[in-house]
Length: 169
Image 1 (cartoon, one colour):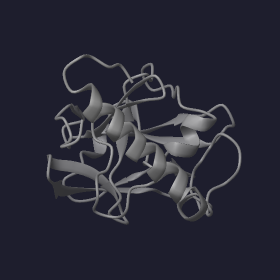
Image 2 (cartoon, helix red, strand yellow):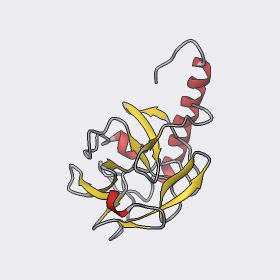
Image 3 (cartoon, one colour):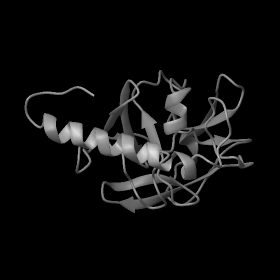
Image 4 (cartoon, one colour):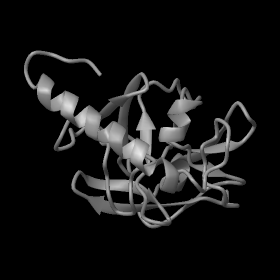
């Protein structure tokens, strides 16, 4: 995380809180995840379903269980740059087949990309999608967070990253 003179204490505090949340949730949130770089849920759906929900940042893309989805600024096109420790904190949204569009989701923006291990990661407007491991359904904990070499943003229904800053960023 880059620090400047203005607000550096606040940013350090936010980074410490986020690190504690990841460490504290590792036992519960990550218990059902597969090992390796996938970081995806133990059960990969046949056809992952995306929906649009309202949030404190406006409308955003969520999964069928009301968990918000993020994009990573360090990704190159539709190729994921998030593996290892990154993928354990930010598990990719995986699917076995073509993802499906729920209400408000533009089906023509849905797709997949193949990860290094051969699994299929869901994309929206060519952006690979991820969860944040400490998020709970309906909650957005890391909007505009700078971690693992890039920024993490929720994604708007039009396929663009929402770059609004979170309340603690």
